Structure formats: C-alpha cells, structure tokens
Image (cartoon, rainbow, N blue to C red; front, side):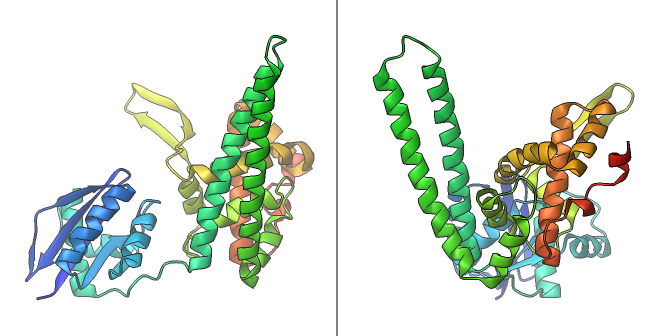
Length: 330
C-alpha cells in the first residue's frame, strides 16, 4: 500500500504526517537541526513513502529537502499558493501544523506533483565553502579586535601580541585557501563565472564579498522575487502594531540568512562613501529621521536586490537601476 507523507515546516521544528489507505497518522514532530533531520530520515526510511510533500515557504525547507533527497527519499516541493487553493477546496476550517501536514500528504496523493531536484553538487559545495569563509572572517575580525585591545595597553606582554598575530596569520591562510577553492569551483561553471563578474561591478563588492553572496544566492530557486530574497536574508521590515496600545517602530526581521547580512554590511558602507547615488539615497533617509543604521540596512536591501538581478538578468550591477536620480537633485 502506498504511503504519502506531508511535512509542515516551521523555524525550529517540522511536523510529519503519513497517509496510508486514505487515513492520516498522528503528528510526529522533529527539531530543525541536523540531529532532527537524521531522526526524520530514519523514520521515513522505515515508512518507505511514495512521496514526501512540503511547501517552498520561508528559508527553512531548503536544508531539510536537500537532506531528504541526499538520503534517497522522494521529495516534492510545491508552490504555497497551489497548496492554499487545495486547502480551500478541501474546506479546511482549521489551520494548525498537524492539519497542514495531513493536507500536504493528501495533496501529494491526489495531485502527484513532480519530484524536486536540488541544486547541483558544485553549487552546494560552493555554499558550504562560502559559509566557512564567512565564519572564519568573523573569527578573524574578533581576533583583530583582541589584538587592538592588547596593543592599546602599555603593560601587555609581547608574547600575547605575537600569539594573537600568529592566530590572525593562520586564519588569513585558511581563508585564502578556501577562497581559491571556491574560485576554482566557480571557474568550472561558465554561468557562475558570469554571475561573479556581474556582481563585482558593484561599488564596494570585491571578489571576496561577491563569492560569499553568490554562494548563498546560487542555490535559491530562480522563481523567487526580490522581496522574497530580502525575506530570505532577513532584511525585510517587520511591523508590530496591535490595537491602540502597541505600535513599535519598524525593524529588520533578521529571521533569515545571517551569512548574507554579514556579507552585505561592509559593501553598503563603502557604497555610501563612494557611489553618489547610494550616498544621496542614504542621506535622504537620514534627513527624513531614519537612524543611520536603518538607512544603511535599506542600502543593504537595495544592494541585495541588485545582486539578485545580476543572476536573474545576467547583466552587470548598475546602481542607476536601484537608486533614483531624484535623490541626487535634492
């Protein structure tokens, strides 16, 4: 008898329901972690499902979907709108994680969506290397800050300064080795090579930054729109308003890809200083009462839109397409 599985995904957990003979099982919950993924894979291998169905919502489905496919399991990643219409047709009055998982299992059984194909090994490897470079860069920044603090004191022993300097040099070598490996991977693919060249046309974006950004963006579905990519990076603005008593200032959600946010910070700082259009946009926001960090985050969001356009349109980054000439006239 065929078994169909629905997976409803949240930020920290995901719920799994299997459907066999027209009947849905009880909900099983797993953590959104490598350990949780491993437990779910073991459970799914025991079930031997015909199809596992999940929605392409947010940023949390991707790693789980890749893990399931790599484990040899049949996965379908469906459009959320399609599932929404299916739920309406089923007159599903309740909306809970368990109900959604059961409906996803039924969707897979009745609609028979096509199997999902993850990004190729080169892109997945590039993402892994890019993330390691990002982590090491953060560690190096911390080490440099410690070195600065040590050198600011006259009483610091030279041994401590030398030790920190050796640690930074070691991190430099590791970052350089990984960067060369990433560039070698990109060189194997003409498409990725073009993307990298187009991204480097942006002010403040060198090969190191473009490499990290490309490593994150190249694995995303090409159907994503710019606002969805902003949400993926956690650069979307979250409003908190309720009745007459709660009206908090808008702020970044930060519920997204921290690697992209970290990679875009310094390029945005540089662009504000060296690109007249970006500076005019930044100054206009500050003059309207925005804090400097808010204005900078707006630049980061614009830059991410432009870098995603480099991939979508295969054209070089052009700030004139992102920042209005009206700000220059002000």
